[in-house]
Image (cartoon, rainbow, N blue to C red; front, side, top):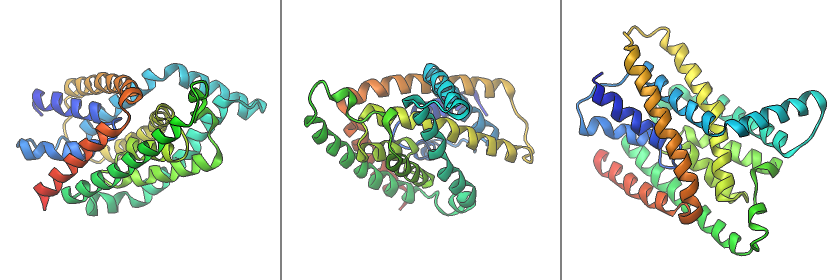
Length: 277
């Protein structure tokens, strides 16, 4: 790989991993505008590891609190909102983990066409827009003092956890966007925009970690040279861009909501269908 490839692909991964716009759809566009070869499994692992480092770094205080609360809940029986959230993250990861193992081969060989991704972007983009519109209506019914409590991730019910967990399975469909579908489910199930996004980001930690672990196992049997310096730069650049993306996304949705991302998804989806049909 050339250095320009490393920089651009790492930036694309970092900037799109946590936005509700599908990172896989953006990476699909790269070979259309360039003649670059496939970056290889080692590079995929490196940039995903960078995204993982970013979300862990951004939510480091939350993760520390959730870990302590989970331990207190497990070994001492102490109940709290943080313990409930920690358990929610764990339980909501189980369905997508099992589905990923069972359907991985089929998805990779049958569902990665540009047209398929285009329709996924549009369909799930419209669903996100509808969910955000419903949330806006619900928000108007809350008083100013109630708005901060109008759907917190620390008060997730069993129904909400199951709903978001099942929605996350849909993220296996290329073009859906894992963050997009989990935020959509959160909004439809009564969470705020910020709570839906934060829960989605926390859910990404075990999901990305499991995916990277599975890819690492596959890498063992892949005969290729690994340029360590380029992998390190890709990891660092992916981490920095992903960290910035999380920060600005959480600020942006407070003011503008999800509609800018919905419009972008519709345009990108239509473009992919045009290119590949």
